[in-house]
Length: 489
Image 1 (cartoon, rainbow, N blue to C red):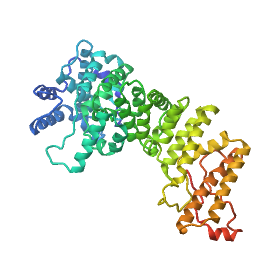
Image 2 (image 1 turned 180 degrees about the vertical axis):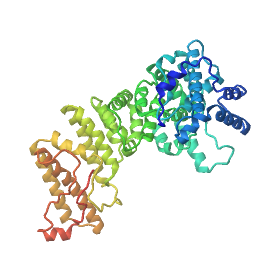
Image 3 (image 1 turned 90 degrees about the vertical axis):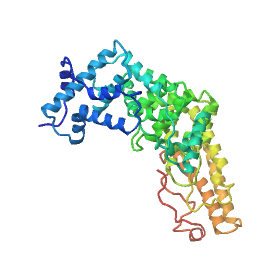
Image 4 (image 1 turned 135 degrees about the vertical axis):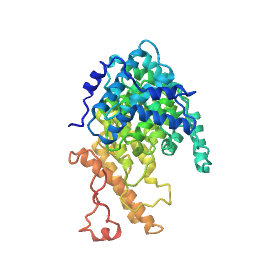
């Protein structure tokens, strides 16, 4: 006997049940509570747990065993589905009271298997009253930090206080820095999550959810809501929001929750790009977003393509805020790959003049940074790179003429000669100066090959040297050549 469920047959059968019993024990317990969404004390929790087992045990049993449904269990499934459909029909005429709404959410959540039951129920059963009730529940929910009556460590209290204050101040960079500590500690609210899932079923429901999120005064609630949404849903709803708190928290949640080995759909990327473009209209707000989301691009790798798309047609100030927010590092790392995703996405959609504008900003930021040359204690012991290499190549190839490229390459060669003939405090200082000069020459040399059609425009994967180690024995003994033979992506 197959263990696969025929949902179409189950729902069709349930529509023929005239008077279902439904979750009578759950409703009885919920109706006895002052607030059916808040359990006070172990006795209430125990009573509701027992009611769940009596009314929904047959459904939960399948979840754990995946054994074929017995005739008795199937009858219970059909009865509970019939009750749910009847209540949804009733919602068309009148909004459910709170105990009934809590029961609806409890039953619908029990039927969550490979996808929500809301995606299986015919749209005809969904109504404005249902969506209004779900949105009202979400909009009136409150959330706060709690230690459960226990004394918390000082560092936890300090983190909580900092998060709460940053939320009030719309200090998104601080929110991002504390996100990993706070988001992982947020206790999930199953009613809130199920109501969110219901609203995300239709465009009308998503609109109601967006209005509720816009009213939230705390990011904690948005963390709960976003946890029940797919990346696609966050993209669609996020672009309709008006509040910066709601938009930022949804985007940050997506970056934090989305599996790093999975890319976003083009539709979602376009929705996020539209959201970013809207934020860019407020220069101050956009700078905060970039300091939060783009200081370490690897943390928001999934957003980088959308960020690149949004820079096409953006003001020079918006482009500059994006580039200057990046914490440049001379080491090989995933931030370099993430930034390249952003810049490459931009290059795919932007025209030449747009590209040249961004490349100029990239090159200037790269030159000002100069592999952290101002920091005397920052020693280089390997072939240096930067997060902006892909854009630097773009500048050399598309902004410079052939003669200007030759001139820049000659200047970089002269800098290496200066290192060879200068006095240095010690070998560490000498090697640092060597690697810094070589890194500049390296990217220019590669870009020259790209411009000449001898290499693809990508992150370099080979190390170039201005001499042949096998033949120029003096240089190979004087300067380190034991560099990684493959580097980049």
